[in-house]
Image (cartoon, rainbow, N blue to C red):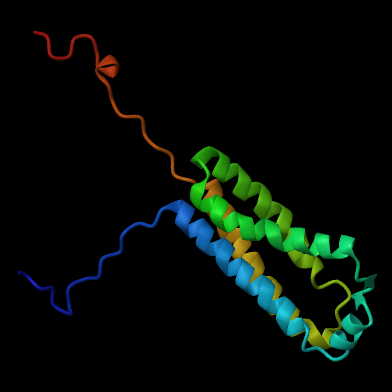
Length: 159
């Protein structure tokens, strides 16, 4: 058996666009969840939660449902990106990524300059992932229709 040497170039096989987009949504969700988790480390956040307040809102079933929707959509996009048919997949990813740009930016509303670097970095990374999703979905590869006998000129093969 022929064993490749360390100087042999590594294989770089193409990754399907669905897998790339699903991976980007997965990374987006990790960031999204960890930013929320790290937010809990800020002074007074836990005390406000114990008092039933999140930001300026009272903790309620409606607020919690809203939070679930905000995290549930990108969570579902991981699996949808892997299983939806190409045309629907492309459109769904374009719409979801565009919707999440303002949702992501909104996370900085009301924050102090003291925390600007944390939110600028986290929001910047999330926006980079959304841009990757948009670019990948927009540039989704198209299949070239195979040539058929019907496409061949009438005189082909005849003398």
